[in-house]
Length: 133
Image (cartoon, rainbow, N blue to C red; front, side):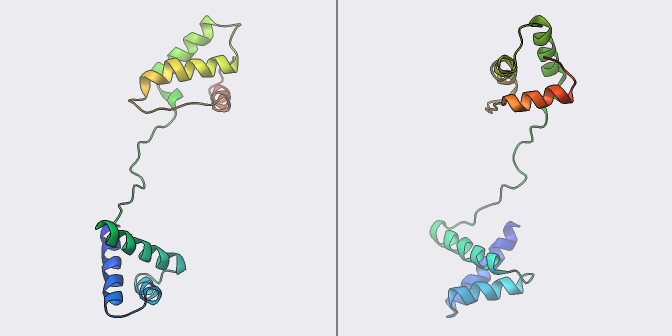
């Protein structure tokens, strides 16, 4: 994707340098590359402006973030929550359970990432895993 952006910006800048107006140059470039529409023409101009200002074309971060998944599928977390529920059998409320998960359980797991669960998420998890509170 990055090399495609580079070639598109290069073609656009060549057209502009040869005297073509910016809008028509981006439209011509967009139609030669898979017949893209109006959004793509504006994107080409934005990429070119960014390149001219900074000297680099921005990389896409799509799909490169850390996948977290469901914490309850982790046996250690599930065991901590089960133990907490057994120890506080008649005193557990959803807000206290959520506070325990956020402050005790997830704090050790996150590797520096801050993840905060909401009460609604905890309620949904409790129903999915058939845990009672």
